[in-house]
Length: 608
Ligand SMILES: Nc1nc2c(ncn2[C@@H]2O[C@H](COP(=O)(O)OP(=O)(O)OP(=O)(O)O)[C@@H](O)[C@H]2O)c(=O)[nH]1
Ligand SMILES: [Mg+2]
Image (cartoon, rainbow, N blue to C red):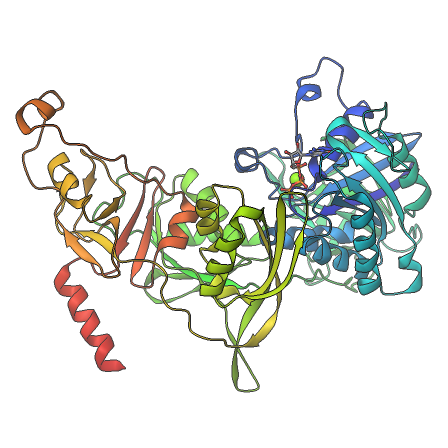
């Protein structure tokens, strides 16, 4: 039996987890020297959206060997919206590398992941990364990390941890803070520390086979693949096993696979402590226990924090529905959402009347990544404004409150105060993190956070680093006035003309260009004033390209403002919907005609 270490890599977003895993993979010769991965960055971020956005979305495993030990590594996402992935996979590990940025120090998500890891009793190794940054303040950051442990440790033992220093991007880890970080180095000090300090998995070879399923994968030929760490016993191919929740049905283990680099290799048997991928149990879901039939006891299940945000989703009801997508019915959406629920543990889906669904998740990014995946797979849908989840505690309405950290160049401090003030944020702390940057810590209602990130990015020329972490449910705070201006609504269905658009651009910024086909009730721009207005951007001559300037005089058209899916979700108000198809994102009024909108407003007035 092989000697094994199982570790998770945890941190706040962007502190360098995936980059450190690159170095571990490359330096333990997982790839041949001429293999393309040797030249790649963030190798574990293998899916399309991860590569596009430069963030990890799904936790993933790989395995390396060093000095006769097999080290299973779980790379986890750092963004708070994906913290369900951390919760889901930490139970496979016996230790964790907590990566901390040498300049930013511990951030909201550092606290969250450390808390989870300590609660599970994982042995922690701290890696202060990016010590090469010009404004690294390693000593201060180390003190802050100590404070964090003092706050979160469950026992005395957990206060003793080793700290290493790294330039993950250059594949170097040091046991002491080096005077000169450009000196030669490699990841050996980290590997040695892992072998010394991370305990071997608790092995009970004698007991019956038991394993909690932490991950699911799917293969066209092999079917559903269950991934987890064997808790006790030995598993051999063709063994009969059960899911403890349904003990009367037995399954025969078809394949057993163990990690090797980024791949899986087949094995005849696997032992307690191994992280395995097995096939033959098509009905299992994450969190369930697989077991030898002789013992039907379940192991602890995986605890996932509650969702904080929900939105309504339905099949696309716009006049342009079913023109661009392959899957457009609510039945097809339902099947797809059911599939998603199997692995997306922090997602909740509730079926409502009229083919509508209520999706609940951990934040805007969590839900928008799901929508982006659906549209890329060919689905069409419409969604409403994201709303925070409130709940009654002792008869009083409570809402989620978050800690928000914002790092910006000093010159934008005023903007931060102003924007957060509008949203009733309470400033907790303000601290400089370099000669030129300040970190603000605010406590505020999650409700007030919707749209904040994109607003700040625009106002700070893309420099603001915003992160947030759920704190608690607190009694409902003050109402926040609508921050957005009114919109420009198309009064016609037809093709946008340069003439019509030019007139609309006197009113505000527009989202469409000449030649686009739009429908009545579509939102085609943002008004410079507070109220909504109807505009006709289809009027005037239908100009052909050739004649544009000669016959009508030169019309200057400002290019359309294009919003991403996340920006569009943040943009829409309660009486609007976002139409999502594989090719288009259109914002529309729920009620498409002016008459219907008027009626709706009257109904609302009367009901008040
Ligand atoms: N200066 C410097 N930059 C680094 C270092 N290590 C990583 N980076 C950069 O930091 C950025 C984030 O790195 P990732 O490895 O994707 O961070 P992560 O923690 O995996 O991020 P998430 O998975 O999205 O939470 C990348 O641009 C890296 O190139 C380092 O040692 N020094
Ligand atoms: Mg990552």
